[in-house]
Length: 204
Ligand code: GTP
Ligand code: MG
Image 1 (tube, rainbow, N blue to C red):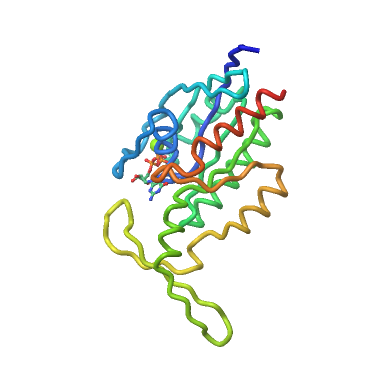
Image 2: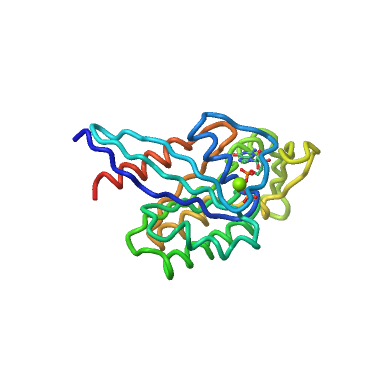
């Protein structure tokens, strides 16, 4: 008890999924609409208390741009935990997340805890608020409008582009991953995902 456990944690995921935003929310309680794309990687630390134990996360926020891919092993090697981030409004980022999980399972340490964060969950809420539901020949068609954070222009997305939670849940379950939908913008589930990882780390 009253011990501090140091834990290396790495964030991986496609460009623009919100890795830096999640860290900024977790470490400083802040969010910015125009977060700059990470160059190389950035380091942060934050302590989480679980009962009478403390976990000090040493966080590596990696760059999602492909040209930095070769640096990633430096950050995930020896990591106690990895948070693989995708953007729930962009299914290509989920495909990329699955590739990161594969790479971690093949090249990383076997005891690294892997969590999946389906980020930008606030946009799903925006969709539900402004959802138009139509029945087309028995099929349910849902379209949505929301303000895109990056350019503040109105975009229309349809259901195919929105990653369905169920698909991610099935994948997470099959691969023994911990999954949460998060929002760096509204803070939903952000502390929770780090707390859950800390809890698992104090149990080992
Ligand atoms: P790279 O460093 O380039 O790999 O990107 P990243 O994964 O660090 O993404 P970043 O945190 O820079 O966020 C990209 C954009 O998405 C920024 O404009 C953020 O404001 C926005 N963003 C991040 N998280 C959220 C979220 O939860 N909701 C919404 N609506 N926007 C978000
Ligand atoms: Mg970043």
